[in-house]
Length: 172
Image 1 (tube, rainbow, N blue to C red):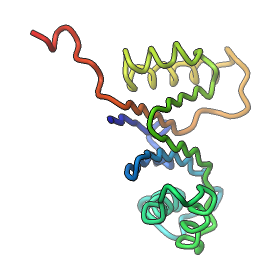
Image 2: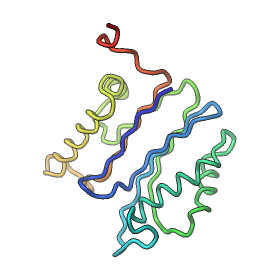
Image 3: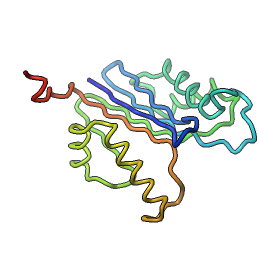
């Protein structure tokens, strides 16, 4: 199994997103936390990193020890939140639990079919797709398409059960 992931801030800001990949006991948990940008006038818990980024990291750290195949995801979330309940930060969470022989792909903008997205992920990997996503968001912000909100931090994960096949240049 291999995992490739990338999470980047919009512009020069603090990246409030976090990707964590937990493996063990016959499953892989891929956690993507999208920290909700704070509206507070300052950071109260973590000055340097920022409260929202602190929360995403603290939550993922608290989740790691409670992950078991038998514990439902909702109960694991509640257990992790008990550890960070002194914070009122918010984050959206995408949590994909992969058991052997399952494939999961998600394209939030609907730019690809499942088959095309899978092919592009295997062929091009993450960075070119992230550049394409940012170009799409830039065009959308310029009025080329309708949008509810502006671009934010972006995260992507590619999980494969087997390492990618070597390319023809690797076989020489």
